[in-house]
Amino acid sequence: MSDGTANGAHERTGLLSFTDDDDSRKIIDFTDWDEEDPRNWPRSRKLINVGIIALMAVLSPLASSMFTPGIAQIAEDLQTSDNIVIGATTGFVVFLGIGPLILAPLSETFGRRTLYLVCFSIFAILQVPTALSPNVETLIAVRAISGFFGSVGIANGGGTISDMFHPSQRAGIFGWYLLGPLLGPTLGPLLGGLIVQHLSWRWVFWFLAIICTVNTILAFFFLRESYAPTILENRKQKYEESEGGKFRIANQDDRPFWTKLGSSMQRPLRILFTQPIVLTMAVWQAILFGTTYSLYTNFEAIYGEIYGFSTTQVGLVYLGPGLGFFICVWFIVPKIDTIYNHLSNKYDDEPKPEYRLPLANIGAVLIPASLFWFAWTVQYEVHWVVTVLSTVFFGLGQITILNTAQNYYIDSFQKYAASAIAAGAVFRSIIGGIIPIFAPALFKQLGYGWGVSVFAFTSLALSPAPILFFYYGERIREAFAIDL
Image (cartoon, rainbow, N blue to C red):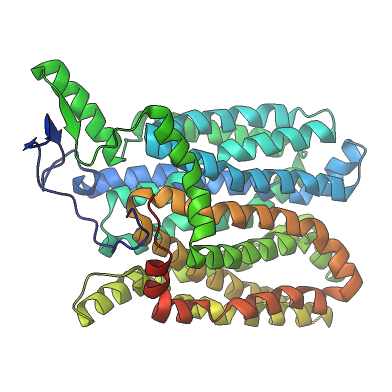
């Protein structure tokens, strides 16, 4: 969509080539059942692509939180304070958000596969100097840089899935992919706790170096290019070499390369700051991520000091939200497509991005409710099982909001889905990275009851957004339409 208002259908045109009256070049495009069109690939090939990028999307957020059980050990080893070590998480998460601003539009210029391979190779390599960090300054700096390159799976995953799946089939697949950005920070402390307790904090990064290298090797052999303009550009070059003459791609942008690149680099921020719905949903996701990292970085203090848990036991607490993620992806996320298709048929019109939003209302209720639940059960030191149960519902709410929002972005901006998702990701990650720095002081000043309730009240203020955008979203998009 070039104006922010296209529907979710996004079918391929059926022409391979023809001659335009104003241009003698033959046009290259996909036919209806073209085997090179990613949407016509066998399902097995699509799922291999999804599996590889989903693992990338798990590993970079995993790296964001995996060392948190070792914060005290790192501080002692590098002769610094715990709060400064937390800065290594902040730097990583902030650059995890900044990365998509650059990497998403680059994938819409050079193709998805090239960006995945280059960036994740660098991300894997950077785990080595992180493991060897002689001081906290090196740790923070290298972690920040690795966060930038590690963001490639988050930056381009949604766009890649949009390349391969029709809108009516997308939400279920997208739900499993989206487990990565949330499941990574959840599993990280559990795995990190085991490594820190039995080896040392440096082995956390050696472990990451190994599994990231394996994933990169798999990508080199099995990851296929999915971005239609890049595939068609390769086809165009083959035609010109084998048949001679000149060809052009359907809807080809003939502007100079640097002009196109400059336009691509501006696209995510233009989407973020000119589209009220994207900005509102980005703020909501930012609050969610800020809340998540604030809780995760303080679980050690909460369950270690209040409930007397060991490092390994604290790691198991993170399975609470993880269970919520799986319940939601298994039972609720598939219904996003069901409702989307039902509403499209019911109103007998072209599918609208707003048809993705109804299930977000589940998250709008569960997020503040679960946070109030967690806040006051911890404050009054209720049995730990009750507190962990609240995190299950928190995880469930997170998935419903994140999944519906991301699908909304994709349906609204189709060709530029990666840029639209990047627009939301940058705000989410920067705020999500900065808030945890202030969380310990907030909890110390207000206690866990009112401290966590601050996050609950903030999410409660945004909870009407899904129902408002469902009814008025199309009107808002038309009022703020832009040419991308």
